[in-house]
Image (cartoon, rainbow, N blue to C red; front, side, top):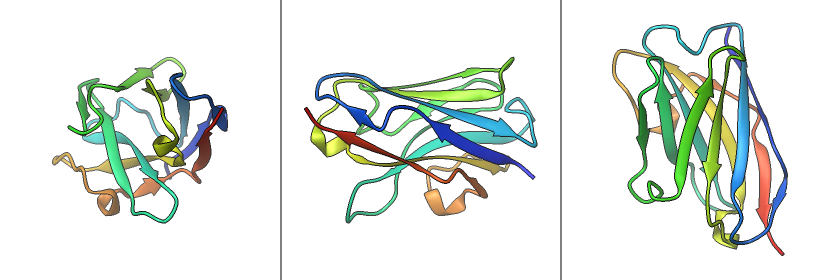
Length: 125
């Protein structure tokens, strides 16, 4: 059973870069057909897919966040990371990492099988 755990600072100042890491256990991030995503939920809003890194290291980003988002991985540590630059208070949200096993990549949060518990990130001075 794949398990995911987010970690990172809970408070980030405006204009800074938000950095989160998702540690994976129970499976390898290089396992064929797995995709590893970052998804967030601002207060009072729905889930928003931000981007993913596939098992082969290829990355895909939401068009609306593409200019500020970077997802990378460390295969030796079996984790993947999110960096979101130039944050504003509108980036305040619960951030989740999630995984999906399928030959088809998905940008739909509800199609993800495995989820971390989520971590609250607040952007404030």
